[in-house]
Image (tube, rainbow, N blue to C red):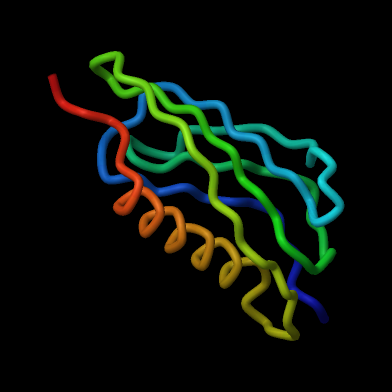
Length: 111
C-alpha cells in the first residue's frame, strides 16, 4: 500500500500567532485544504490524502505575537512508499525541511 500525503507540518524557531499556508501540487494547481495552529511553533496544512508523486510548493505568510511578519516558500518532492507508517514519514520530512529553510531564511526579527 502506498502511503498517502495528507498533511504538511511547518515548524518554526519562534512563536507564530497567525498564518496563511497554500500548497501547490506537481501540476501547479492549488491543493484544497485548511491551516491549523498545532502549537506555538507548528502550523499544519491538512488536505485530502493523495498519492500523486512529484514536487510540491508550500507558500506561507506568518505573523509573530509581537506583530512582525514573515513569508516564504518551501519546495519538497513527495514519493509515496510502501510502508506501514502511513503519512508519518512525509509529514516528518516536510517538517524537517521547514526547520532548515526557516533557519537559513529567517525573516522575523525581535524589536
